[in-house]
Image (cartoon, rainbow, N blue to C red):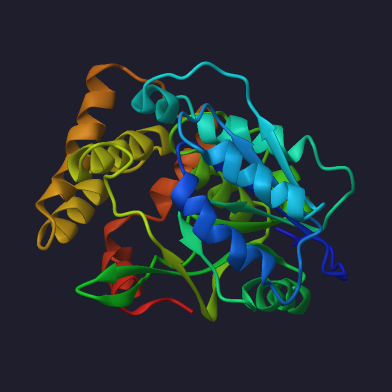
Amino acid sequence: MEGPPPSRLRGRYALVTAARDDAALLAALGPTVVAQTTRPTAWVIVDDGSADGTADVAGELAAEHPWITLIRTGRDRDGLSEGRREGRDLLALNAGLDTLDEPVELWTKLDADITLPPDYFERLVDAFSADPRLGLATGTRCELEDGEWKPRHLTATAVAAQCRTYRWECWEQVQPLEPRLGWDGIDEARAVMNGWRTRVVPGLYFRHHRPMGRRDGSRFRARAAEGIAAHYMGYRFSYLLVRSLWHARRDPSALGMVWGWAGAVLRRERPCADATVRAYVRRQQVARHFARRFREVRHGNA
């Protein structure tokens, strides 16, 4: 398949943050965005039914910086699990993108629970400029463990969900995305299938501050959500089982992935309607790839 045409970047990029009850985290993220050596064209913060001071924090940022905008979804609050199942974050992100006044070359799904080094986006824009076929990219997620920030590596084409940047042409080509748990795996598959590269930029890091499970109430429920997403994406059960057992060596809650997958099967939940994407996902999960994928998760793939 022929890859996408080359394009020259002028460094125009936007950020969209879907925030819900994230006041303290957003207050920590804000200064790291403002301090970027290459400033975004726009940062849209979408307050999605918060009950805390999230809108107040976002409003203060917007009052100080005209390139920051606060919008509210206007949706009634619902249970977090229902919102996640419905892909509420995708709906909020699309609402933010719809408010952009000017075209941009790149846009970033920027979660509220991270912080960034000052040159994060400068280096990311450079990576996109150097590779016209790069469609989706991120840095390496770091999490605090035993008082030390440690990197969390992903498999070869995977891109961290908390801070992922799209080339606009790539974003358009992976549409339509269904607002369901797992949409942010379907987009990766479609990007690669359309000839784009997806990658982690070597040496580029960001910090993730929300421990797994805090949003969902427990680590087990967070892992179960991964299992539901895996079912939607069309995962091989054998791959999901091996992945669960691998992580369960250090984190027994990882078995929740199997629970979530099985629950989706018993409820007869509908998988992604795009059979070509599901087939692509399954091809990447054949047994002969297991050893390579485990090496990538342990040591990185850059």
